[in-house]
Structures are given as structure tokens and as C-alpha cells.
Length: 176
Image (tube, rainbow, N blue to C red):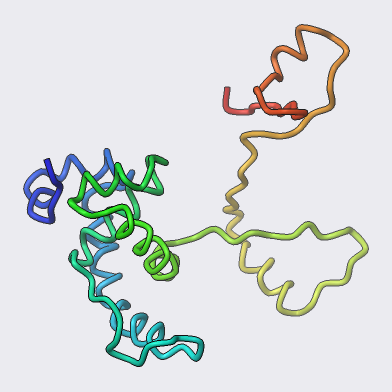
């Protein structure tokens, strides 16, 4: 079975399974991507290091909805590109190309967390950095702390509890 836009509209239960988003949120994302896409493509085609002129190059075989769906499916399921391609009637090279082209676009329309740098206590902050910190007055911060590295214990039971199978790495799993 090949998943098409009609399939996704007729049976929206596929959307959370494949992409991890509620169906209404996915369609909002697609509409936001459609609004930004023309200017994004124009900017991409006019970049100075591009070998072909504007209007040159390969045209997309799949509609934007399916291209966004296959990128989100790849990111959500962490499966090989060839399998994602089979789901949507594309080729592995289409998936690879769409990942390269659409990820920057999706970063513009999706809320992405900001990665912070560790600040020393005595380090002076610029006005811009202080403004960013004051913008967090509501106190909502997303921290990825599911795995933290710990020292190798001399106790066998503790060492086994921290075993992850990774070479020379003993992480503490906080979500288990």
C-alpha cells in the first residue's frame, strides 16, 4: 500500500502512527510549509554557490504534503530511507534529497528547542544573552536528561544497572 495525500485525508489515524503528530497539527504544519515554501525555494535557487541558474534542476515528483510526511516519518521512526520511500511511493534518493532540502524549511515552521551553552558563574553576559534569559520568565525549559554519564562503580550490582552496551560508557538512564 502506498500512502498518498488522499489516504492521509481519508484515514487520519496514519498520521500519528507515522509522524508522531495529531492529524490537525500535521495539516497546520503542511499549510505553514506551503506559505513559506515559495520564498524558501527562491532563496535556495538564488544562493551564490549554486551551479544551475534559477529554474534549472530537477523538479519534484511528489507533492509537498507527501514530501513533508516522508521527512517527518523518517525522523520519527528512525528506519532506513528505502523503507520510508516504499511507504510513500518514492525512491531512496527522493527521501535523501527531501531530507536535505526540507529540513531547513521544517525548522522554520516547527517550534525547535534552542541549544544553550553552559555559562560559568563569574562570566559576564551580553545584553542580548540577558534578554534571552529574561524572556524565559514563564519558567518553561526543555532539558534532555534521559541519559547521563556516571563513573564506573566498584559495586557489581550498580555497574550492571548502569550497563548500556556502549563501549567505555556507563550512562544513568533516568527514564527507566
